[in-house]
Image (cartoon, rainbow, N blue to C red; front, side, top):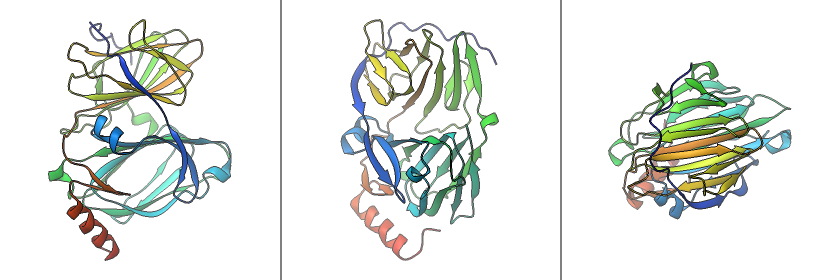
Length: 292
């Protein structure tokens, strides 16, 4: 699908901060980079709680996967670039993530799930984003959707291909919409030297994560962001979007933006609520086997 560009930006957002993720492991020893985490970044990038990037050609780095573990109070968005990962949960959902596919799961009042590789060799690469739920929806019924590679809407411009996972871009509706947080989630592929602009609502918090090549972010004097780094975009009333310009190599970028909830965040591992009392209840419910 080919689309005409949106109205050119009057003033792109500038980069407020560059963040380098922390190498760590999770699940049964899966090696990953935690790009977004911790109270300071969660407050700054509300409604987003976490972004993990994983990618390895070594089976030992991912083969253990993520055995049974609980969630309550938020949504997980898993985007698989390469590999095969099987999801099963206590609500009866099951699906297989493959190259280019997305799994969007609303934990709501809680469930227990597992994410386990269905490969013993080859590359496993992708991302998991945590998106907060408003307080009134934290105990909603769990929901799950597998979105196959071919079901993700895309469009092209000269030297640019954009996959619209969530929200809307250049007249193309993404695979998933959310009314309260209004998330925009784009995977942007840039040929060397090509650029792309995306309008953003003034109230949205937004960041860019470069995972191939490098891109200048902002105006002509914006910094060059290299692969593996996140650029937090400033919230300035006169700025109306983001401008990206690839360097000398093919570049791939995630652009993520959302309407902040401006609610208290109380987190204990896989439980994200508004108060400590709600956290205690979540832990009690899990220990009593009620997250089903």
